[in-house]
Image (cartoon, rainbow, N blue to C red):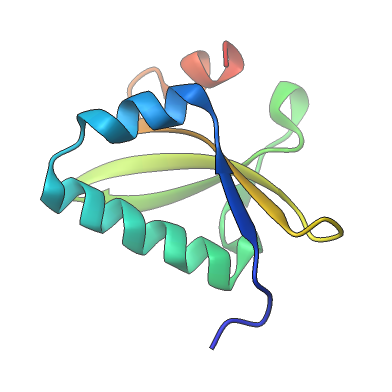
Length: 96
């Protein structure tokens, strides 16, 4: 059972990437999102330019993918920023 119910929002770049995924990839991503909703601090908190961003690493069809998000427990909002494979992920995340 979830401790807190969070409202989930997504950025345009996240929505574009999600739209291109196949069904089995979407299921893996939805599982990762469910794990984040149940414990928003499960990801690694970044520093520097990305200081308010968390990144959660998960397997999607036997490949390592990263999911960047931010959350605010006061307003109970989880914002999904970006998702993708590790290659150039942080460079592209800074441009979001």
